[in-house]
Length: 362
Ligand SMILES: Cc1cc2nc3c(=O)[nH]c(=O)nc-3n(C[C@H](O)[C@H](O)[C@H](O)COP(=O)(O)O)c2cc1C
Image (cartoon, rainbow, N blue to C red; front, side, top):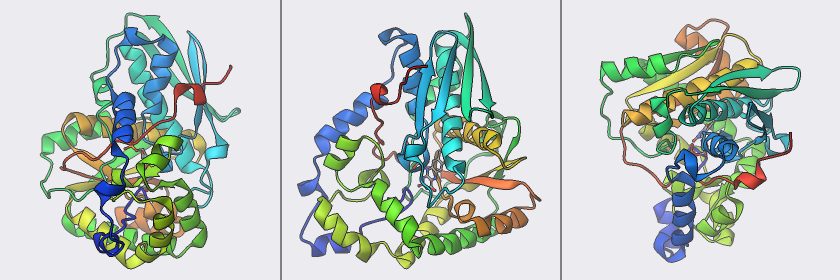
């Protein structure tokens, strides 16, 4: 689960005499997920709802969905929802604004599917992202179809490498002003990045505020996940569903630095490479750009059958950021996001809140 790995190990589950099947209310979860991720025709809903729906399918930190949408026929504004901030893991709201950028990119692609041109801007005086919508007649961007296929896949991958043409396509698609993408496929360098991931992961797991915040956003069974429609559902990370009281007891036993680090090692060594996103300046406008670039990377990878998942520990624990920048030779620029990629089967999908919960009056 953390998003990353928190895994209630099979041994612990067996010791409790439970099986995932016996305690998962999977059917209602699957129905909710299927409805959220079903491809939608433009005519199936109003244009504004169509745009916002696709925006909400973007990746977002801890799946808090820290956004609200307002607007109409000419423009959509994405507002930060600071009530859904995660101050322990993201004290400067970097991830929150990157999440808004990812949503803006999806919204722009949905606009193309609605025949509209679009222009994304960050309004620094209001801390919002505005997407101006232009004339009708625009062609649908081929990345639009990947929106409903993209997911963060936190499993062990199959070890295959990505062909050079695929790496080129991903790099080109992720171009966004103010943000650079570095793809790392060199195994010794990947091991050095892994060392930083493990060190930062250890620091996070020993930080009570980080663990408490993470636990707040974990959804330990299908019932919890469906009632909240946000947060990190265990099955999305390949973990069994558990009744809340058992999860409370088991969490402290199985969420240890050693266990989590071992998973990070297996995840990285089964991956084809890392994608690291850097921005030119360390401000909200550029964090939005990092989120946009990630989303374009992710959709392009998805269209090519390539999976990905974040391993952001060394950019979340601030003291590791300069070390990562030094290792990768990127000077003073802030490393924003760390993502592994490779090949794997799909995992269960995450949920989203209904549109009525995220649309506000202009
Ligand atoms: C800025 C940002 C930071 C994230 N950091 C992590 C992370 O460190 N580890 C992780 O497993 N997932 C991370 N995620 C992925 C989210 O948890 C994921 O997008 C969310 O749970 C929804 O799932 P989905 O992307 O599969 O729809 C991050 C996403 C964003 C946009």
